Length: 222
Image (cartoon, rainbow, N blue to C red):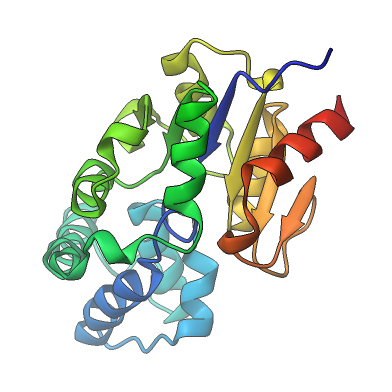
């Protein structure tokens, strides 16, 4: 008899809800204030990356690497976060991506622990706005780690918080850095969207992310 996975670990942005556009609007404003133009295609390269690293990528993109002191960079990152947090007021219970609320309810009924692995320090506020806080048994965020994705640390922190073996879990991501992080800690990886390499299971959108789908994937690989 094949047992269920010990836990399912979710990324937040692009899997539970789509705040990528809110991130983009905040970064675009901050970048514009220092004379750098970015578009949504460039913003895709920031998926799953920490705030500090995102800023460094923007500075490189604008030819301004080293132009700002660490203190100035910290101020820019904080300005972006302030804009982003303000925009989170737009989120409601209707901002959950298709199929996710139903999947979380099924996992609760199946008694499968659920974790969150998000580099966002705003994750608790986002889950609260979505009315999903009670659906997660443990939330790992940037406060618990020193290395961002694609390092596996955030997923390992989520597994540690749940008291489970990473090799007995499934991780779900929509960014390449996240898929790489999941694979690096020995979890089975599920990719949402297109253009992802190395995902054990790739689905076009969250509406296809169901418990029968995940269960079949788990049993096939075990």
